[in-house]
Structures are given as structure tokens and as C-alpha cells.
Length: 374
Image (cartoon, rainbow, N blue to C red; front, side, top):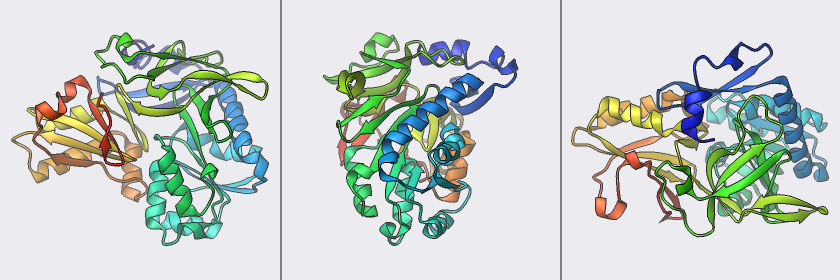
């Protein structure tokens, strides 16, 4: 179930699911047509989503007996359900509106001193940068969802908060599927959530012109036995994982993987999802001759533009348009809880970098090293 199939048959303006009573809808980044995606959840979907998320949070937090939490999540399905999950665990919870300026986020956290913080890596980056003394916020455990959080990044965040590295708990999910997996410090792997069956496939087998991956890497493909308002049958996540295999956990086999390497395909994460289509459309509207490349460094996103017509004012207009393509991202950037998207001019060296954005090439950087582009 690739992005192009979903765009043709599910992300459509006349999807019959929209007419069903009691159906919840969540919107995310755009398609090649410029239309934002709408993902539907039935009452049954929502119940399954909450139960699975509750079980994951319970496995992470219950051994510690925490009583207070704060959710600093921006927008979306994860944010909308966080308070209910924490209360089901017997915890008090405060939700911080993403519209608040970053300084007010810090002040609220200083006043609340929540034992548990539920947030995204990009927002935690901003909190750690803005707080004079992050360890004084009283946070004893962080639960993450959203962008990729590498082991090194999690270790540095834990050091800033003066908590053990294993108290930065990473969860992995998507609006299409729900909670997919969580990192188990005990096993050193991500454990797949209940109701899911995972496959790892070569990128070139998707028939979308994607380049082969490095040895040991596969594109994660998921089938859900419980999702009924989304066609989760061999759904292509476009996330690249390493070490997909089954292991024994508490006496039974569980599918697992070592880590998420990068994303390929049409969507990126910057707080919320933003699509390559949105970025391309914003650039080409101002600079029809431009070639672009997208660079992801940690939780920062930058767009490099190669065009003889680009000047500072034009690049700033492109930046503003990209940030507002997803209003949720724009709102979080304005409040300061999410770093802005950088748009710069660059003359591409074709021999060194190998091709324009029409090949959907994205460059991931880790500790100064550039990973293989897509």
C-alpha cells in the first residue's frame, strides 16, 4: 500500500468514510495535488488506539509510580489522546498549548515540575536550549514520539536533564497506523505493538524509482489486524529500519528491530508531517528554474535551492510559504517551540551530490557525517 495508491483511492475529496457518523478525522501534510491528507478513525479504531497506547505507556512508566505528567506535543492525534492515557494510569496531567511562546512553556514547566514529560524530539530540543537549568524542571522521565531520536541524541538529552539515559523513552507511531513500536531498554530494541505484523522489503521493490538501501536496511511495511478505517494491508511506512527480527519477550515471540535509520518517500517529520510535494510546490511557485535538496540534521530541516534567480527576499518568501503549508507547523514555529525551516541558496556540485530533487533525494546528517541520500 504505497503513497501513490493511497493518494489515488484514499486521500480523495469524496472518500465515503467522511459521510459515516461518529467518524473522527485527522489532517496531515499534502499530496502531489496540493490537497492535505485526511486520515479517518472509527470509534473502534479510536478504542484500539487508546488501549495500545495505554499498554505501551504502562510498560514504560508503571514501575516508577509517577503521579504527574505534562504533555507538550503541538497538535495531532498523539496530543489529542495524551491526557486520557495519563489519567487512565492514575496520573494528573497538564497540557501545554503549542501557541504559547517558548519562554512561557519553560515557565509552565518550572511551575508544574511534572515527573513525566510527553513531547517530540524537536520540541525537547527547544526546551533544552531555552531553559537556563533544564535539570531544575523536575522532569524524571521523558516519553518521545515524532521525529527519529537516535541513541546519541537521547543520551545527550538525558545528561541535560540529569536523568538516566533509559529514562528517555522513545515511542514510534504514525497517524495512519497509530502506535507502532516502543524502545525497550531491557532488550535494546524497538518492540512492535500488538495487532501489527511487520515486513522488511527492499526499497527498489516498491517500484517508485528508489535507490537500493545499505546492507541490513529494509523499508518497514505493516499490516494491522485491528485498523478498520484505513487500508493497513502491507502499508508502506517509508521508514528504513535495521535488524528486523522476532525475539522472545516474557516467554512469547515479539517482532522487533534495532532502530530507525531514516525516511524515504514523500513525507518528512518536522514537528508534524510535511511533504516533499509541499516543499517542491512552494519553491517552484517562486523559482520555476530551481533545483532543490532537503537536508535533515538532527531535528533541523533545511532546504537548499540552486537557482540563478534566488535572492534573499525570495528565499524568505519561500521559507514562509513552506512553514505555512502545514498550519500546525507554522503555529509551532511562531511560538518558538519548533525551530524554523532554513531556506538557503547553494550551487550544487552534481559530481559530489548526484542528482536533483526530482529523484526525491534527501540528505541525512549525523554528527557531521552525511548518510546515503534517497
